[in-house]
Image (cartoon, rainbow, N blue to C red; front, side, top):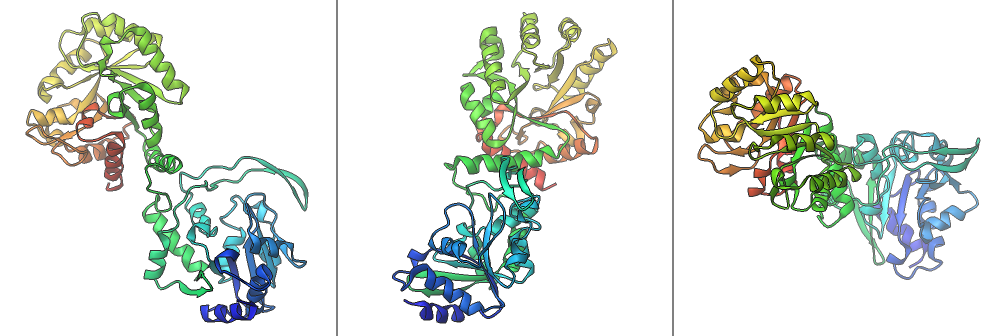
Amino acid sequence: MNKNDIKLYLSDLGLKKGDVVLLHASLSSIGEVEDGAKAVVDAFLETIGEDGTLVVPGFNQLGLIPEYVKNMKNSIKSVHPLASVCAIGAKADEICVDHYKQETAFGQGTPYEKISKMGGLVCLLGVDQQSNSSLHYAEAILKLEYLKTSSEITFETPEGELTKSWSFHPGLTKDFLKLDKYLIEEDLINVIEIGNAIVKLMPIKEVLELAIHLGTEDSAIFLSSNPSCHDSVLQRAKLSQGLIAREIFSLITSSSLAGWYVPQIIDEMLSVGIDLVSIDLLQGRPIHKIKPSGIETAVNDFRRHGCEVASLRLIKVPKEYESIIKIAKDNEIPRIVMPLFNGLEGLLETAEKIGIKISFYNALISSEMASEILIKYHRKGYTPGFCFNSANFTKVYEKPYFQSYRQKLHNYVDQMDLEDCTFDGIQKSIGEGNSNIKELISLLRCRSFTGNLVLSGNNRNIGDLKDCVNHFVKLLKSM
């Protein structure tokens, strides 16, 4: 294989005089090439001619072909410590100028956008879409939540030394491989073989438009779906976190849904982007059966990892309720959630005196009875909130949206348990039962609800925290 052979192949591929081409290449993939990288680069330059421009990546480990371009006398390198390109040809200056001045490394105003606007092409020679750095442009334009601001770097510029970071910067993990399927469907890709190398040529503008369209429809399109890829798991969590952050309510998980041991609970929370927990069970033990020192240790562990305890949740009202209230106060836990009963004025008075919020949840009582009890407490000057458990209302054969919520309960709701079931009590995924979860969330949105939505522990009967979050996110996206 020599330069002239490669030129013939490039012409067959569709490359022509005046083209601007971004080349990602592996020399070894071709096989034996006379004069090596020089032959490949010369073949490209002679095919596109004096009016054309050849661009290669100038960052990370370059490889023989980009390294050769970088070291050519007439090569121009864009100034950027993280995403530079090297270019040769008529538009090299225009492509490379002011790269470091842009807000992002790959987005607006960068060489990647300039090549697109010039009607340029991207060529993958013996490499796949994972090497296609131009696709980071789509991520940056979409401002996907999993992108981070880069670390600050000090480097030399034409104006002198500069310290800077860039927003919406990509991580190391990605999955651009699936893009080929869509490019083939849209007839946007030409493919030939040069030696042993599969070579693909695509119009950058159309490729990026397609990538942006796909990313708009599915913000996780460029992320690996491999559950063993820790970085991708965390990036997907960032997407869920970003979606939920746009709401004015807070999303909380029950500790029992997230796991058995505190370290496991923390890992599961971080993997789905939730940082608020309601402690109901730890290692299968309810709150009133755990020593104060055990709760204190758990709370400190959560906080060390960036998670906050939003409440303690009781499965019953303990006779010695003062000790639970003291635990909440000592650990700066703002809320205690417990079943709704009559005769708890003493508990409410003790809690409210020291600033601990009490929220009652309905445990297999009618909405009419729940409303009567809450009204009585409020008439006596107490201010308990109400944790609306629509599944428990469903189990007493009420329609939570059309019947239960309208029993004046909406005046007191400060939390809602995300838990679903059918009228005969069979547990269902969120939004798939008779508990009107979707309708209730929509109504709470209309009321600018700033309280808590709680992924309750009962959901563990049908899945784990990740399943629960996925169903909840799916429900939000459908609204």
